[in-house]
Length: 490
View 1 (cartoon, rainbow, N blue to C red):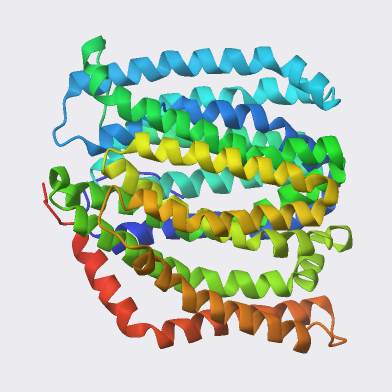
View 2: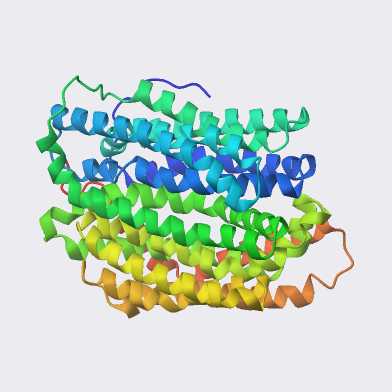
């Protein structure tokens, strides 16, 4: 994929989303091809080592941006001195985080009883360092609505990192193939964004220019830390209670759930953030921001919920055919975790509303509440077994949604009913068709490949039926989001 310097693109919501989705579709396709290969070349323990090794760097990575990159996107005017100051601040922060991660490695490895984790974590310490360096350049690209640039970088980094990972796995490098894949994914992205961004930092630093971003950044930073703690708790808990097999099954189920999050939820949320920022107009456009959230939620639910729920009911032949027989056990884990994965998609969109409204303090308060309750309930369920713990985690995520929306209603005018209704029909269709499929397809004595094809057809049928029934609402949402990118245009 050839990378060229970007020209400013037109401010078009769906053009920007489609550009990001196109690049991420390439990554999804490559991962879809590489995952079965890696699952067969590597052991279940290899995946467990990498999942455990990612806990500390992922936690540090949430601090790498310090929330400043998202804050810069919200600014109404570009100030080169301000942006340069933020860049040098984040560069120093990245070096500090990398050193901290490397220092923690021996202690964490000892606690997990996995000596291999020391070297793995030290290498992965480069990820938060590079992420800190990339934040300001990426913010400049996104603020200018040049998502075609990001698409090229994402696609190129995905192709290269997946190719190297598969090659190393063939050569017998084991879990190192997955570790180097993560480093290359961020490293290539960093150099690509450096080259293609028009931002060039000056040798200037004014501490006073950090102040407008401190509240937003601090709350965003703490929120990210809380969310990582909540999301990584199962990895640590499963390793301590059930062993590395449970860690591998959980991490693989999460890896599969990233396909839709990477390909659709991520681009939609990323572009929605910029559009909502333009609609906000110092609070005067709060109703417009709420309308955009509902529109994006309806689209996401219509095209993602039915298929994922169908797969939740009928996953075993799919995972067995895709990953090999030893991985068939993730079907039940994925099925039980699916409601929680769907809630994560919805809250990913909602996070942008809190950011745009500059109520990151409210989002942080909500996150602490949700994390404390969710982790406590999850840990209480652990003695009942792996499957029960996963199910309880999902049920809590669904049950907390009304509370989540009530927090959001303090930022923009939204009723719980208005945001819940777009989820009802997609969920109902997915549950019914998925349940019927488990009685029709799974009992058939067909090869796994044939059953996988039938299940894929069922997923498409469920999404298509939902879209057909709600077409008028979807059409209105598309028109609204299409015009949202030009709100309060530059």
